[in-house]
Image (cartoon, rainbow, N blue to C red; front, side, top):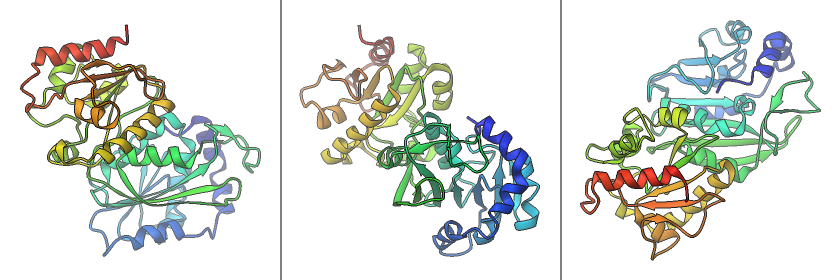
Length: 361
């Protein structure tokens, strides 16, 4: 998902005027990000949607200014001559995994429609180092890529968020939120988020999912490789390939884009073993997944591993379709695909995934 094309065209046409209207803008978000570092970072800091670079002087070390609008990047040398310009969209960052020390995103994501924000943030999670700080700004509200009557440039399209749903999305993308505040803005209220990149998996989710796979929680191995069920010996991917719900091994983004298979976890905290999790964590996680289901409405949500569903929802649950829905989505529960689960064969696990993907009879 790239920046809204209608808005992009307006920024291309009005880059200089937009810059001139914002000269002298506060460096506070950049200074907050800079203060989160103990020392000058060795890796580059990323300004996502940097525009003409007005905030870059407040950032430490080497700074990459990323923007999809060439006319904005042409102004970068006037305000941040040392910055490295990169023309790209926030949803497709051309950087190696964990190559960025921290990131600033001031209002760039307000031009991304809500269902596609999780994958844009998953990209940010991928490129930022574990523990790296981020500063993000969003608009409060309940609109999804619609114009604002008070927009002085006219025609730009904006997305607004309820703070509770936004928190769920940002945490699901793999960030530990340290502060979420709402303040009055020029046109609408602004939501400021201060967070750090967690050692976990980001949600791989979006609109039109036919099946949302929900694991118990990421293993440390999966969190480090950024592939759910990625540990050698886990049989999820062999079963998914055999069931026909995925065609590329250990590529969750491909499974979402090509097959409508999303992936999340009941608990985001990565642990060596799932038995380290608490009942309270399972219940809080179930509420988060329920909110995702109510929002994105996957055709089915499939919980991989009985322990989480039993701890959070039904202690007597058995594998198969459950009586209760979750956020309006039918629920299927299947055994764990871990190699430690000797009670289920690969053929059994394949059948479970095939039944879940087929939908409730």
